[in-house]
Image (cartoon, rainbow, N blue to C red; front, top):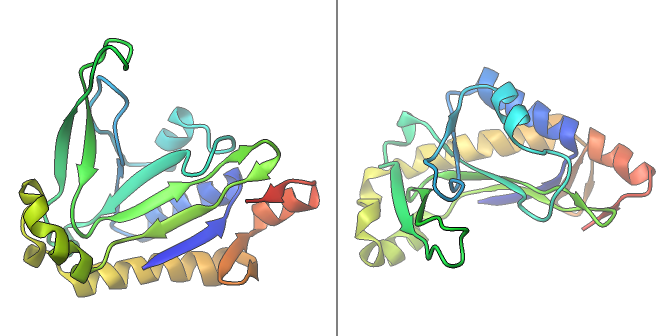
Length: 187
């Protein structure tokens, strides 16, 4: 399942507030900063104080969402970096798991608002790749019905409760709609 939407900073805060107050989803960095470990965020305020939720390219701020109800393995994988190209850093971490739900926020860059996104891979795709990534555990451990249910619930909230209008299947949230009225283009 994938779902794209346009969101400004206030919309992103509203999405995060929903996740933290109305769900049991845990929010992790998709990837850590070089030389650091993965962070788990417990509040919207933690995220707002660390990230620029207004500016940036496509997928400027990225998270992985997980709850024990999904039953699969949550894996924090160390990624080796070449210090020659990474300001002396030799590692970073990524948050991996077959049924994790991605939350990617796009920002404003060059007077254009980039798409935001939620999604997860399918069980079929995960099974096709399982042998290539044994470090991620068994695909069969995941409760794929629950993965789909949780992702659909998040999509429903964004698409049906927070969206002011739609461009095709893409939701335009209230703040994003105001940005367009101010001359920001959608990308």
